[in-house]
Length: 228
Ligand SMILES: [Zn+2]
Image 1 (cartoon, rainbow, N blue to C red):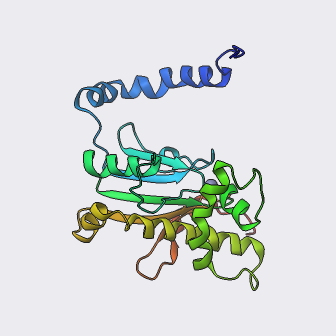
Image 2 (cartoon, rainbow, N blue to C red; image 1 turned 30 degrees about the vertical axis):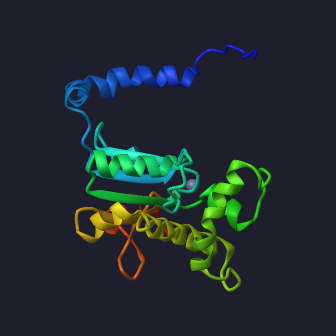
């Protein structure tokens, strides 16, 4: 097999230089301490691969604070002990059993390409490919979201994105050990939703399921548009 050798991306080298002079310079002690004592993050985040929705950036997290797993459309697949390789389930198991996280946050977002592709039945790849199989996991969310008929399309997509967060929360409850810990109050699970264009963050209120904006007055004060 021939593989063309190309230079490591320049942007990453530049970014690493900035890290050396900035974050590493500030946090070197913390990195050393974390290397010796190991990580013990209290929060696990399950987010989307989308490059605009980095949990560490949105929550201003320091090294060692967030245990993050990202996949297309922030989906938690249901518990399926079938002997196949399950990346999200393995991360969940590690977060829960080894790291003993206290919170699991499913972070959905606006303008999610995965959700949109599902809603529009777009076929970037044939249904036999990985993404088609993966997106089929969104079917219960689509059922929760109901009909798109009476809604503007953008509103329907928001509804589907948020239903998809709820569906992932439901699927967390299908993992027997995790369910016990949640019911015993040792782990709390949360849904959240990030508005990419606005930078607004919404948290799902239980049990009603409404997504309520966090720090709404600060956001409004800091980012009010004149005339809006
Ligand atoms: Zn997404």
